Image (cartoon, rainbow, N blue to C red; front, side):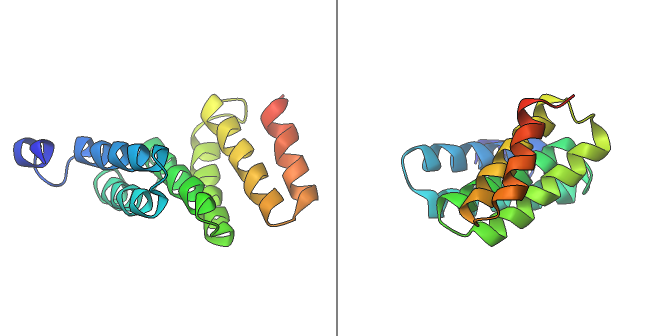
Length: 129
């Protein structure tokens, strides 16, 4: 609330605060509430930073991971793919942000029983060269 008051509602720090609240809620098992805050962060980051910013990719990844926590794996996969596409356009496949998304994609694909695809992402995450 203080960031919104001081910086205005359309500021990247407000989005970071939403994300942080979501992360804390997720850590205490309140995943549905966490998802609401992470979606707020994603929407605000897209509006303020544009669709192709690394922080937007981070938010897609965070929303995808939280969707996975609540068992919404198809939606999670879509969000993780958005994160992957943005990050691959910005960074090399060896960048830690990219390899982290590969790991998350692998986990999500395993939940969807798409094991060959999961294995390919696991290999990329573990050996990005």
